[in-house]
Image 1 (cartoon, rainbow, N blue to C red):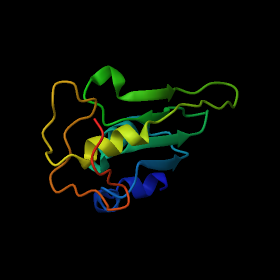
Image 2 (tube, helix red, strand yellow):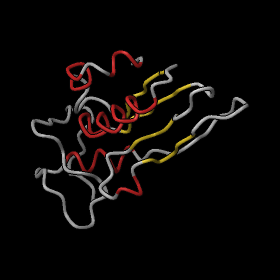
Image 3 (tube, rainbow, N blue to C red):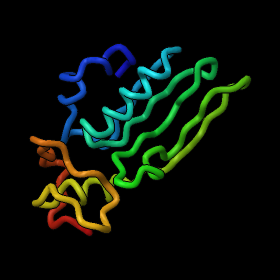
Length: 132
C-alpha cells in the first residue's frame, strides 16, 4: 500500500486473514496520523505492519499485533541525516499458528492480541493442526 490507501479502513480490512505482513510506503511528514494508522492497521488486519518512510520524516517501523505493549514495535527508526537499512525477523509461523486456533480468545502465554471480530484466516495460511 501507499500511505493514502492506509487511510481507507475498508481497504485495510480487505487484507484481513490473507496476509502475514502489510507494507506501507509513506513519504509523509504527518507522523502522528500515520503512527495511529499503523498501530490500528496491525490490529485491524492482525498482521505485521511495516511502515517505510524516508529519513527526513522518520518513523519507519514494523508493528506487531502483540499482546504486550513493549513487543509491539519490532523495529522503529525515527529519522536521521543518512540513509540506512534496518533488518528485523518476523515470525510468520508463530502468527499463523495463533490465527489458526479454533478460539479467538487469548491464553495467558499468547504473544498476540485477540483476533478482530469476523477474522477468517485464508485456507493457504492456515496451519492444521495449529502449532502452539
